[in-house]
Length: 340
Image (tube, rainbow, N blue to C red; front, side, top):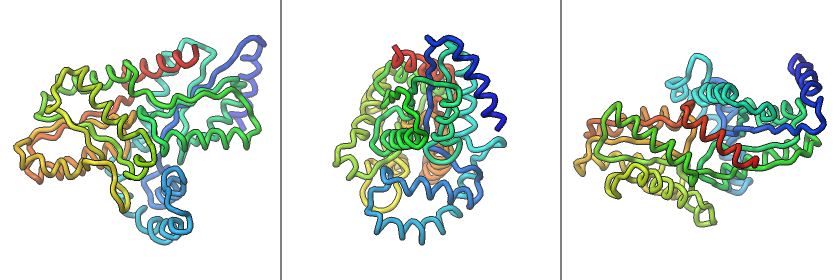
């Protein structure tokens, strides 16, 4: 109620001039449980794994598996993983996203542009943030999914949620989407800088691994461009770093369920590298803009342990862009470009 009153007051101030057009920029991401407890993890997984964009198995087959098996087992398995990385103020994805948002707001000098973060699954929800934008009198919406590479599973899921939410709200602002940005020079330079800064601090290893969140192979065969975009991302960044073809490799992680996914699988790659005499690796995941469970637990903890146990000596995880000044500039420049 307090926020609504503040919003009405703010809207009255902002609309003093009828010529003034206000833009709301929603930085959208996948989401996170509210806590590392099984109850909240179950709630999050239920929403996530019920999305038809994510799971394309017929409902009559998938829903019994989801409700009778997965939601009764997986929350307890994932609890220990979330607890390994959980921060004092919440999940890394949410905490780091809020830090990024705060710094974007500090840097933003355009008083007609308002930024917020919204999660496709979990909180703060896309619907709630759109409602906040509506309350302050936003005229134009720019939806900025925080995924550098387009995929039907991510981008279209966010588009679905935005459009459904607007329809329920009976609100019809002008809406634009940033669908991908891996080809943007700012993104390529930012990612290359992140790697170079790590090399300056920790030294350079034998091999640079670009690992991306995997997708079922059949999604790619159905026309999803994500796989090719990931390979191009690696090539663009490698070219910027001026490294040779045999000094980097692309792979895919987070396989879920049965069936073939995009290959090579990162976990298998890491187990085999020491056998080939490669004992030092650097690894980065440019499929994510903000560190999360997949990067901090699966890659930095699980994969590192597997690599060391297989005979590896040095495993250096390079963080996502997170709250870096490069990331802030990238977002600001992309927003300005799309609002021109």
